[in-house]
Amino acid sequence: MRLQVEDSPEYVEEQAKNHTTDKPIAEVFRSYKAPLAKVTAIALVQNIGTYIGTVFVAVYFSSVLGFSKGAASTIVLVAVLLAAVLIPVAGQLGTRIGGKRLLVWSYLAYIVITIPTFMLMNQHSVGLAMLGLAIGMIPYALCQAGTYTVIPEFYPVKVRHTGVAFGHSVGAVIGGGGGPYLATWLTGVTGSTFIPAYILVLSGALGLAVVLLGVRRNTTEAGHLYR
Image 1 (tube, rainbow, N blue to C red):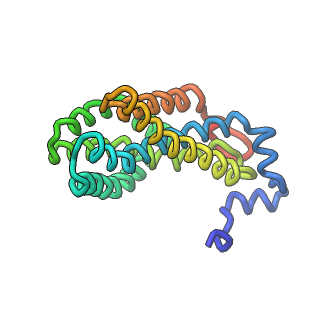
Image 2: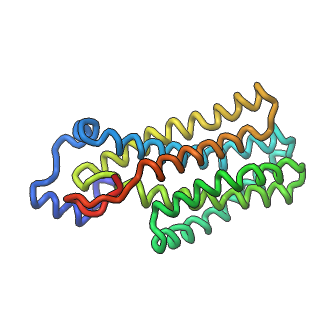
Image 3: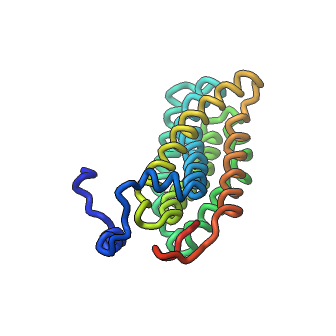
């Protein structure tokens, strides 16, 4: 299917001007190390939110908080269905306010909302746990929409696909694999049921730092890009 996907109009235009490259990976590592690091960090935060907020929590509810597996699955299912509605809404919001601002909102929401949502989850009530995780889908949805809007803009057209694919994949491996593992290990070591919340808050702070300190809008030969 990917072999059948057409190139973007911007890439076709740059290709006609001979502004593309035959060695995009080498060029990304040679000339775009900083954008690559930023994209990796943003993807890491996104995937920590995804895998802790929608995957790890199923085990968290049953193994840590003592809910039955059926109740845990139901809570997560309702939250994920809500997220499926919220993400397109967040995408529409992003077209109005911009991807960078959407990411800032998502990271601030992770910092502010996460611990209160976990407090609801820890009340040993299926209804309150469902409400807590549902509220936690707000920063998740904003982050999903904002991430995919922003990360392509870190690169010029000639290396955009490669830079996004490599940076996002590395961030997904680290955040998606490392986040749940770290949450499991630290919960076992400390006995605290709020460890996943603390990880989400710290990841939100990391994302906020990357976006506010590391993203600025410039004009380049490829257009208006986040560099």
